[in-house]
Length: 556
RNA sequence: GCGCCCGUAGCUCAAUUGGAUAGAGCAACAGACUACGGAUCUGUAGGUUGGGGGUUCAAAUCUCUCCGGGCGCACCA
Image 1 (cartoon, rainbow, N blue to C red):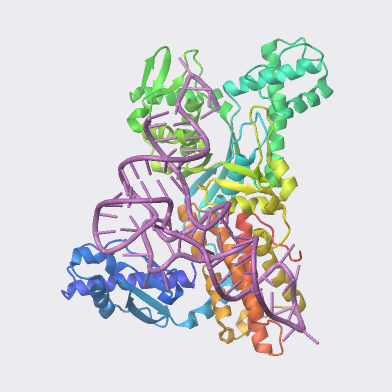
Image 2: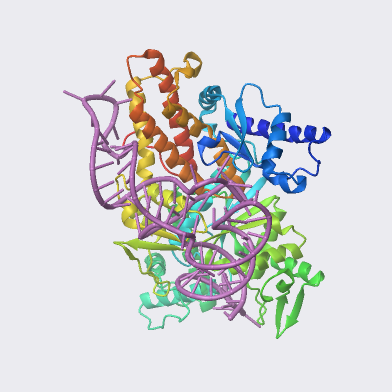
């Protein structure tokens, strides 16, 4: 993956061998080796890597952690040429200090891999689907959808970079009750536009966007649908408006730099009989029962709070029935794993959907649902009032207009999914140092400015990287070297926000380096080495920001 | 009432999933360039991790309980 990861793996294996040999020698009692960590300590004073192995063995060995650590050190055979020193520290950690020479392997790696630097084959081509946004086509994309879009797209990018085979999907809720209400809302607008005095349905969708849509239609067909049978008329209006709304959503998401591999229609599950199939399958395994005219799923068997209706008394399947069929369909398409990104208002849905997978004989852990908390918007220090009832809210489109795509995506990705995000519109709109996205982009632009003046970057093979000895230089190289591990970690734990933090830390180290070390100087050899360094930093920053979906300007 | 998420510096958030002295940005205060972009850098101050008990070598992290906030608890999606 990268030099650092290679070394970490070697240290881990060396510790395992040391424990085994100590057992053979009777110095340890040789119970099963626990899963232990070899990780980068928070404080660099504790070395480049530290392991807690001795601490974890203490109980089974009935000895003090420090004693065990000492024994391990006696037997350990450390990777040649990398570790310069290993010692017992604190309550029983083993700290490893690397020979600084490892730094000089990093820059050739970055130069050679260029766009691919940071990527790995960790995922081994595992086929993973990320389904995100999947907003109702009956309205506009709101802030929650925007957060989901940024998060889902970045997660998909991260997974792809970590060697997973990723597919992005948008589930179109184009069936069921809401489409009925959608149709009635459209019909009311349509008839009102043509001068008829009809009431707007109580359960209708109040957004102005539906009115706009119908104005467009009236412009094209005028009163052509007035005399059509209402059922057929609503179907035609829905068909028209749905197409228009989906087109807008796809366009807005594309503007937000989000592109899907597949748009999956809920209606096709009805049309192709997949819902019927899945009901039969569940029926056959005895997970369904009838009560009060409805067909119920025993989701309480799987830890749900209450059983759920799959088919209503009127014979129409619920959304949940469609969702079960949908997820069964996903796994039938061959995905090893399926990740859904949902808003917190859907969290109650998780146990029953997982339960349904289990009932269908699908390992429920292959379905992962990331719940993201809701977004509050702030403008002028005050929360922005939004109302679904009146259909007045800030849309993704508005957000892009107001703060731009870079700031919006960075702000969303900056926070972990389970934080209740306060989005400060004023801060995001600022084009100054208070705005974290500019801080990172500025580092990139600064590098580009130096490279422009230098005109060429020498190939790393022609420079002496060992001239880079300043602490600021070594710290920068260290951070550059951490990218592959960061991406792998973010992919394994589905935590794309780490990338935003990483980008910020890398920018900080670059600015620090810039202040202490002059790149273009009258020392040609050193200048050349530093050009190689900042070019590697540029590549690393660029690759990271691209994962987040933020541009890397060469001038600002 | 029950379930899920959250509570960390004045504000917005991190914390390698149980690790060593809890860290960043913003805000505040004090400083730094006659050269590569000052949209930068250095320093100071700021904490009983909402309160209290428990688990262990070790707790912001796990557990119990209380307080406070968000979201759910439809034959809606």
